[in-house]
Amino acid sequence: MIRRTLLATVAALAATATGAFADGHEPLKVGFVYVGPIGDGGWTYQHDQGRLAVEEEFGDRVETIYQENVPEGADAERVITQMALQGADLIFTTSFGYMDPTNAVAAKFPDVKFEHATGFKREHPNVSTYDARFYEGRAVIGHIAGHMTETNKIGYIASFPIPEVIQGINSAYLHASKVNPDVEMVVTWVYTWFDPAKEADAARAMIDQGVDVIMQHTDSTAPQAAAAEANANGGRVFTFGQASDMSEFAPNPRIASIIDDWAPYYIERVGAVLNGTWEQQAHWGGMPEGEVVIGEITSEVPAEVKAEAEQMIADITSGAYHPFTGPINKADGTPWLAEGEVAEDGALAGLDFYVEGIDAEIPN
Image 1 (tube, rainbow, N blue to C red):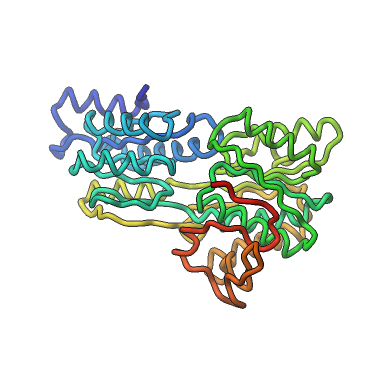
Image 2 (cartoon, one colour):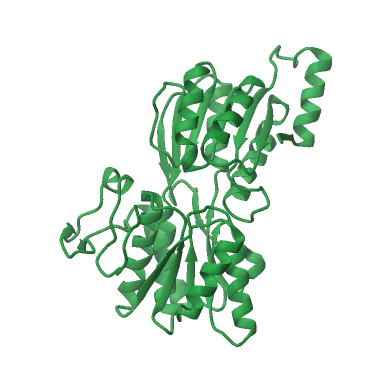
């Protein structure tokens, strides 16, 4: 069910009563389509924080609407179509699996502007794509993980085998293995973005295998809770918040986090529609743009490790360091990046292999 915030409802009622605002224009209607619930504490929560930032920035010049828990596929096309029919001027579709549905609806509504998160298809001039360089954050938490593990087993709960997720696994492993050459990466594919039961089961299975540091590319706090449960029973397991801070589990087991801050992008793009400068683009921001942020590194992390992580953040932000800098080989031992060579965006956008040292298969 599509919900309106109180602010948007008041603005809409005011527009109905007066016919239009003082400048003669109705508020810009901006829609958001979410793959999970806004209370997931992770991915969808952060996108919704971006929506709220748009309301705060533009006030009664905008009206926002959203629908949560929209499955990827035919349901998504139906929901996006409904938003367009309801008069949405700009629609953000916030999950990779919405890529084809977004383009399909865009073809039918050429006057509506569409922004698709984490995809690459821009089949119509009214479709843009946007993404974040999550691998930058994975480099930092991988560095921390390599220092924090005592069993030399770190885990990664992976959602779907797409380049974004494979980038994260590789980046985390590369930087963990730089500080701990004995580290082993255990990857578990759960084929979901948000399923607390599956995520918790994956975390518990990893802990049973001796994994003592868990990373995730899924959206719920269930892995944090599973680690907290293990620690309450005498375990020593650390985790990292995903997409949002998940600070309710700090300082232990959650020792740092990757935060996705979509607010700057959403404000910029809504502003572009309002002032008539919106154009199709492919956006990929990261730490320099303030879109990938590392949350508080807690006292569980030794001071020297924290200092190293903060220096890495500073170097990535300034452009002095790129997480995929050679020499790096593929998992089969063949060269990928030579000494000092930096991976090109095109190669990263299509990444479909593990780096040397990860002993696992990428499922089809």
